[in-house]
Length: 395
Ligand code: AMP
Image 1 (cartoon, protein in one colour):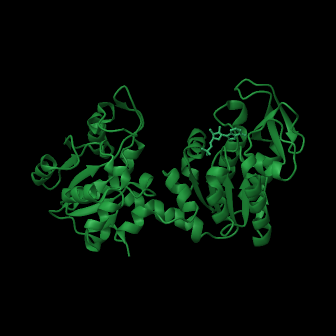
Image 2: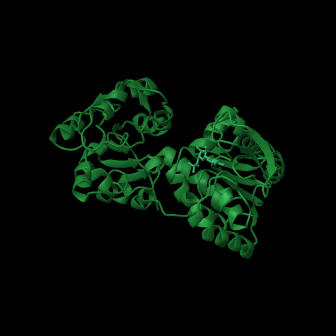
């Protein structure tokens, strides 16, 4: 089985820690340090035990070396969050790096350069991973955001450490436990709310959830593909015509598995995709020609709020409409509120994905959700029941 930080003694050891410091930067300043903060428990634990820490991460999608995406830019913010000096080396492999790491004393931290300056990183190159492995005695992976990638630093490097010298970081451990709790150990009734622009990006998620949940609520842009599959007129609403068969298949499967699949019964429709479009509320089978659905309607929200509030386990990913525009944010915000209420009544709730998390934060509901995942693509892969290369490599 996988080891956690508690299973390993870090005293006088150099830990090579893969973190996710892919933080947004504007004018050379970090504008959101959430991901740096998320790595604190792991870093502090290793330092407290008398170890030293070699941090490595990617940032952005550089094609070769690119000064703008250097990790050096974020050093001041990392120092501020850690409240400690952080040394920087402008490479990730080679003599210069090994030498700097050899000089590292217990309690000290080094941050390496952007891993993706080497194309070998995303290719999962064995030789590159072997070189990376020279940068520490123990490998720790705490980069949940890239755990679904078989990159050199996220998975391949782990092959060069035996099972007693590699472990899951704290963030990773918490994410995996919390998602598993909702997905595989949830108390019934279990309700999933899946939204977002397109069904194509979440087919695997929806199919896997059909094996897990009692209620599957489909909202957002993807709902129109389902409604069209049922023969509804959807006006100018977003649709994926090549996924109509998949939508039919999903609805059939839900029926066979006894899953209550819920589609919107009304919509807020607009005469343009714009924040100040004309709007009206119409039943789901009466979207007028020339209009497009940009949010679920009040009747739908009432129905699904009731289902959510009667659930014991709730999983939410993806907005109910174009919530970036105030006029079409009510559905998404209403779902957040209903989940907050259910959680207050004792349900376990998991919310993930940038948009859903943003909605929860905007409503100040962070403390009313059981677990807010930091993962994007990796969360979708977990919800789809896929194995994560980063976890497999630690076994
Ligand atoms: P995703 O990344 O797949 O979770 O999709 C999120 C995006 O879906 C958001 O930017 C929303 O604005 C968009 N979206 C949600 N509902 C609709 C809709 N009815 N029409 C067009 N876009 C939508």
